[in-house]
Image 1 (cartoon, rainbow, N blue to C red):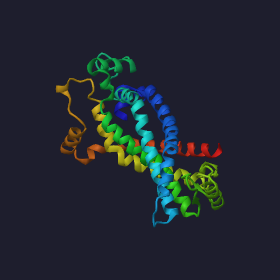
Image 2: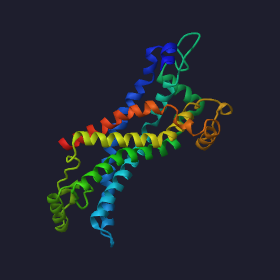
Image 3: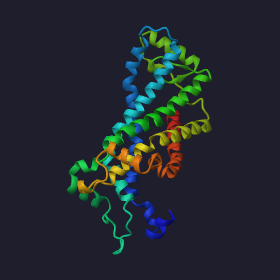
Image 4: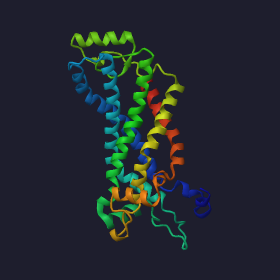
Amino acid sequence: AERVYRRQGIWAFWRGNTPNVIRQGGTSALNFLLMDRYKTAISPLLVWSLRLPSNRDPEIRQKRRSIFSSFLSGGLAGGTVTTVLYPVEFVRTRLAMDIGRGTQDVPRLYPGGTRDVCLNIWRADGWRGLYQGYGIALVGVVLYRALHLGGYDAVKTEILHRRGHQMAPGDFHITNDKTRISGQNNLLSGGSSRDSKSISSSGLTMGERFLAAQIVSIFAGTVCYPIDSIRRRLMMQAGLPREERLYMNSFDCFRRVIATEGFRGFYLGIGPNLVRSFGAALLLVSYDVFKIKT
């Protein structure tokens, strides 16, 4: 940080912030929207699976399917959003790594900002260049969102389950005993399971929700950081002639980093990433509270 400030000035810390704001706003909104949509879409399949003969406790089966629903819908939402917004993430990364000062001695690679990045990559690699590193990014985001969004839901489900709340059949949400009975009656009478009233995570205090969100955010960020590290390395060589590129693909990047830097090479810069997990936890809790109040 001191070196960046001394060589490039204070504004260097906000370089690439415009596409970052676009990415953050779009990613957050679409992730929560699509997670709920996917959860609704796969709910009938999970309800059908509960009707299959089994010797296991129905309550345990219901809880496990609720957790599976959370992880699956979170991963699918993350994969969809990454596919749509990956070029924006690509531009943000390139601008953030443009370390020139804009002077004659230390010129910037992209003095025109977002426009120059897009034109430069388009001329060198075409539209495919804006998706450099997309494959490994897709794997990482699906895993991260499954752990982050799905993990938060799963932790809440487990906490409330241990406190005596029950699952309403077909809803895949936590409810109290009175609501569970109502939901069962609705199903038996041919009604929709959505008629049962879910209290979701309203049984948790604000502090409990934030603690769960913070733990999940740190865990997901730490597990997925090596994949994100490979993605950024591949992004930074887009636009270069193929003979000048250091890595041929994701597997080659993994092999070279292990050989030259060791496993620690995948976790360079993880400190600021863990600090950012505070914002990710706040986002989860804010959306959770908003859903309860609405």
